[in-house]
Amino acid sequence: MIASDLLTLTEAGLYCPAGDFHVDPWRPVPRAVITHAHSDHARQGSERYLTSHDGRHVLATRMVPDAVIDTLEYGESIDLNGVRVSLHPAGHILGSSQVRIEHRGRVCVASGDYKVDRDATCAPFELLRCHSFITESTFGLPVYRWPPQQEVMAAVNEWWLGNREAGRASVIFAYSLGKAQRLIAGLDPQIGPIYCHGAVERVNRDYRETGVSLPATAYASSRSARDYAGAMVVAPPSANGSPWLRRFGNCSTAFASGWMAIRGTRRRRAVDRGFVLSDHVDWPGLTGTVRESGAEQVFVTHGFTAACARWFGDQGLDAHVLPTRFEGEQDDRAEDAEQEPDAQEPDS
Image 1: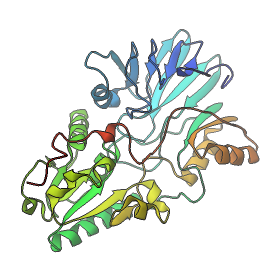
Image 2: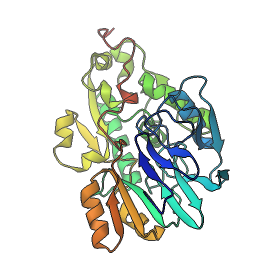
Image 3: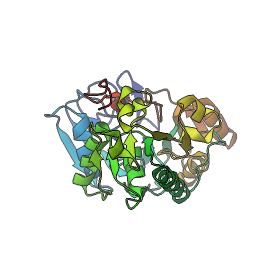
């Protein structure tokens, strides 16, 4: 049992017995409270979903057309069988939430995936005080420390400008939901046109419908490679090395990920440039968040769980590894594996 009987781990995932609901279940359940729309946290088949108002469009895209989706504004609470539940910004992607669960004076926060860095495409992370905190540890080692986003985007735009002057297209790989839109928001559209893989462009639509401002983008349809010279193309990691890339002719490739902080990862991804940009919390952010939450108990999921829990234990906290099916930042998410219909066609 987790957090003074507030949550327990079942075959369907994290379950609140008193409130009779699950948080990010990995099997269909009667009521699913969803932290965000990435495929390892939002799965189809449940009878009813609860997510943030900002997350409605992106979650609906991931669900079947008749899925029942209820929403809460950030900070608004709902009573579920005597348990007070509210959603608060996690700063991970559009609509991402921490789930605050309060019952009989005890508070547990399930943070989902989160980051504390500012992101123009989603609400900023909100620090919550609690008795028990469930944290991810995707990058839960001291080696992972993110450079300022402004520096990263300046480097991306400089790389793009250099490629344009050389007559090349720039192709950058990033997860289609969240990372791609964060990148697009930081691009300088005065350098040239921005094209997107279909998986990215569909999510762009959801972001715009939610009110997020993004530079103009266009679908990277089949056309002459000459049309892409000097352009920026944003695509999911699954497009790297695929026949779909041939349409861009002479191009330079890059990958945006927190894993780029480690030497050797860029080489393994077989790209020309690597930019350290993650939608997950880094080591200073993670340890600082847990400390400032005031939590007495810490449960660590997905990532460097054992090392991270041991570190918190050494700091005097009641720390545990929480085994889940959440994956954190992987090279290829299920939603990113979707191929373009004409991905196998030769360059036109």
